[in-house]
Length: 152
Image 1 (cartoon, rainbow, N blue to C red):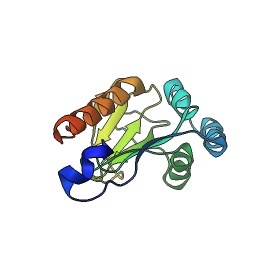
Image 2 (cartoon, rainbow, N blue to C red; image 1 turned 135 degrees about the vertical axis):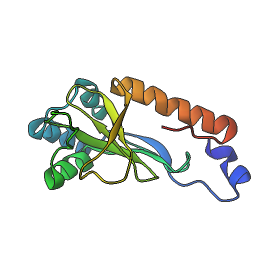
Image 3 (tube, helix red, strand yellow; image 1 turned 180 degrees about the vertical axis):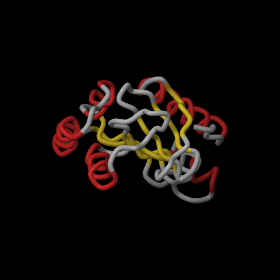
Image 4 (spheres, rainbow, N blue to C red; image 1 turned 45 degrees about the vertical axis):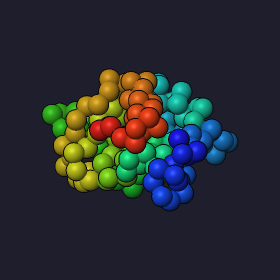
């Protein structure tokens, strides 16, 4: 993606990486399991991946490090999914346009419709993290092919 980026867009690429988990990430993932229910696939993810930062794919796609998820949970609490769903819904990432990605305790992934998490309106984008990562991969593939990041 970055090889042709500057020629296509006229400026150098920013940070675009999938960063492997380090010791601090693994410790943060363990902390996360102590403070909130965490879907198994998210734990597997954090056991291998520290963060995803794709600043140049559209407005950007970001899957936060576990330490950021823990900090946000401690500062603001879990996200209320509405319709009587309470519990450990976690903000796990965002796009560069201000929308957040949230996972519920069962592992489904949602995207907010607005930047606010006070009374969020959410749309389910995937049944589980694997499906969400597949959508991210498609967005990257499409962006590399034609510059269009899709609508994730």
